[in-house]
Image (cartoon, rainbow, N blue to C red; front, side, top):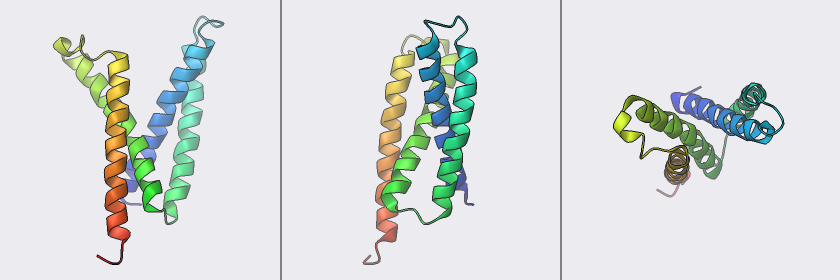
Amino acid sequence: MSLSRTATVLGVGLTAFLVATVVVTELAASAVEFSLFLGLPAGVVAGAVAAGLVHRRLSRVASPPVRGVLAGVAAVSYAAFALFAVRYAVSAARPFLSTATVAIVAVAVGAVAGLAVGVRAERDADPAD
């Protein structure tokens, strides 16, 4: 498997992990004191399942729009981890990089990356050029 496909599979798995962990943790927060202990295993399972499904999908020929969407979803987790790393390492950035800001910027980066990969895949697949 190529490096780009590996990065896509891992990125989609990480995005699914992040989303599932946050959703389950927040839903269980009112009923369970340590709801993160429910969210983390749910996130691991969701990430593994998502990565497996994406690997299976990308092992076959995927259409350009599908590759673009998957690359965009993968870029969300990479952008979020990068922004949280900057937030942790640079104390002056903490007031500007709230969790909501990180989420919004990560989704925007994912949308741009997905669009770029989809357009490039469409251009590469077009036999007329």
